[in-house]
Amino acid sequence: MSGKYISELVKSVPPSGIRKFFDLVLEMEDVISLGVGEPDFVTPWHIREACIYSLEKGSTSYTSNNGLLELRELLSKYISSEYDTVYAPDNELLVTTGVSEAADLAFRAIINPGDEVIIPEPCYVSYIPAVVFACGKPVPVPTYQEDDFRVTSEQIEESITAKTKAVVLSYPNNPTGAIMGRKDLEDIADVVNEHDLMVISDEVYDRLTYNGTHTCFASLPGMRDRTILLNGFSKSHAMTGLRVGYAAGSDEIIGAMTKIHQYTMLCAPITAQIGAIEALKNGDGEMKKMVREYDRRRRLVVGGLNKMGLDCFEPKGAFYAFPSIKSTGLTSDEFASRLLKEQKVAVVPGEVFGECGAGYLRCSYATSREELIEALARIETFIDSI
Ligand SMILES: Cc1ncc(COP(=O)(O)O)c(C=O)c1O
Image (cartoon, rainbow, N blue to C red; front, side):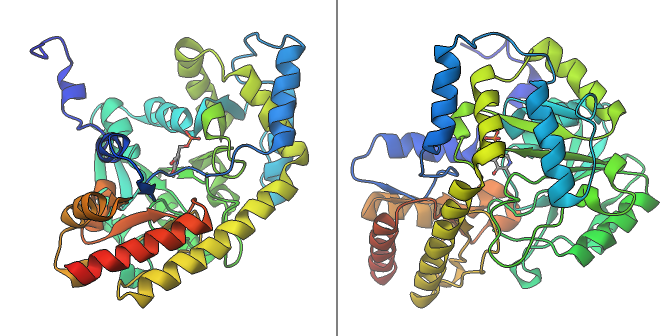
């Protein structure tokens, strides 16, 4: 096919760099993958059991567009007890098909053609395409290891133009593992207020922090109605395949997002929503166990990478290490391609997450300790052979 039927907008966006790499991995045997951004744990049994039981009882219908009321009530309680921020279950919470859908709805709900959205990089690969698909203009802002991969309020302020509509914040961060302190976020809140901007805050890793607590951006004074808070169950409860997330925000914003959602998605899958209810009611114990295990692996991987001479920032959240490979003289793409071919370890080149990710690799430690130990040994062999 010539592609003549495909819209120019869609053609303008390249396919995901992660997927491209993983198509290669699928063709090979005995590969240890530190590539995918998903827990290696299966969904805890009590959550699966709740899903199975609901299917046995015949719960296979649509739900209301904004999600099961019980789930929205539990979400409201969770956010208010964890972050002291209150959202009404009726009109300020929307249950979505993962954070992915929530992010897409958020951009589509607020962007007029040509509006600019500031996006700190390196970042999750979906934001830029989602802004483009919403006819907006992404404005990437690089973050650096010397700043602990935090975006500063000054950087945001410098990127603001008359067309700026919103800022994306995504902490704990994929791929760096960076987090933002309360003071960093307060400084950004001042800029956002002064320039009358919205914030889309993707906090899908809020439960996966290792040093200290997470600050929810919406909980800062004056920020609740300027923020579209996105979160979900994929990472915290190992529920990636169930596809359930949510957005919280003002009545006006959630109303606009619900309008798009009701015409394009109808509702998130009922089985997943029932699993999410069980996760919120009884999932804390299993979640904390998983976080403790990620923390052990984090120390293993970061320690191992630093020991072999790859300078690795200490991730404070999520489940990724982001070592610099600049000392090897290879580009991230060369390093990742050769490591895969020669030692059968899959990692993701840092520039997939933004230009400033060049010279880094993303290594997910959501993989068993045995595999991580073997992967580290293979990476060391590879480095010795360069
Ligand atoms: C920062 C971030 N947001 C959102 C997602 C996607 O979440 P979901 O599975 O809820 O769509 C990911 C997945 O890797 C992520 O890293």
